Amino acid sequence: MGKVLLIATGGTIAMRKDARGKAVPAVSGHDLLASLPALVQEADWEVFDFSNLASCNMSPERMLELAGEIEHRLLAEPDIQGVVVTHGTDTLEETAYFLDLTIRDSRPIILTASQRDASERDSDGPRNLRGAMLIALDRHAWGRGVIIALNEEIHAARDVRKLHTSSVDAFSSGEIGALGNIDNGDVIWHRRPEPTVKLGLPEHLAHVGIIKAYTGMPVGQIEMLIKQGLSGLVIEAFGRGNLPPQVVPEIERTVSQGVPVVITSRCLFGRTAPVYGYPGGGADLERAGAWFASDLSTEKVRLLMAIALAQGIPMAQIKSMLAGRGAACP
Ligand code: ASP
Image (cartoon, rainbow, N blue to C red; front, side, top):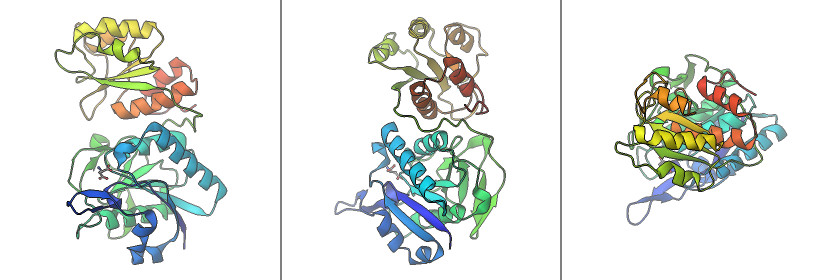
């Protein structure tokens, strides 16, 4: 039997309804397995209860701690075949991408979760956990980066997003598509992901902020944020990467102070690019010194920047990492 490391962090998969009928943390990683005797038989489990928190409590610092724990155990225990991390769906894609950026081990690391808590008769937790375990034990899962597995779909951490608040079919990688799926207990791979940026574990993290653009956005908000001591800023812009023209001078001043500004889009899928030449258009933002982050989501750009800036990676290199799909791996 293959050895699987189960790291429980919390989320709905580890919740039950309380006396008010509201889902709250209640189930540890050990409890989760104990309630699924069939699963216990299928792998040699090593369980670590990292936390039992809703994923709104996740922070880059906690993600760094989790990444350090996984890296340490993988190094110390060469017989571990794969790692399954249970997590809340709300910020699952952020933690998954953080692990993908920081851990270089080629063994599979799978994040899974559920939309229905453990007290629901038709909770999706057990099926999702079993799917993640099957991937952890699959030799063909090696070298595919950190992945998430829910609803019998397998997605790359870099590309996936949570799209639905409550459906069990909540995650999608858009036009990039899934890496594979689970069918009748078999792990079916469709493709290998493109190489992603690998930064290794940083000693600390830089403080990078996010601001979301909206119509009529007032001047002053960007500089107010920068005054809080940010090392970088991600602006979630419109469409291809365009902003209300009145904020462009602020971007220019921010960049001239050595604080990188990265443009992402509030569109869920597709690339940003400086294709528009009108005031506030992408070309204007590029002239002001802003960078474009291809199709990477706002939250994921922020994590990449928080690690890369803390590691002192040269600005030009970070800019090119963001521009591509990940070929620039230092
Ligand atoms: N609110 C929950 C969380 O992210 C949602 C879930 O786990 O599905 O912790």
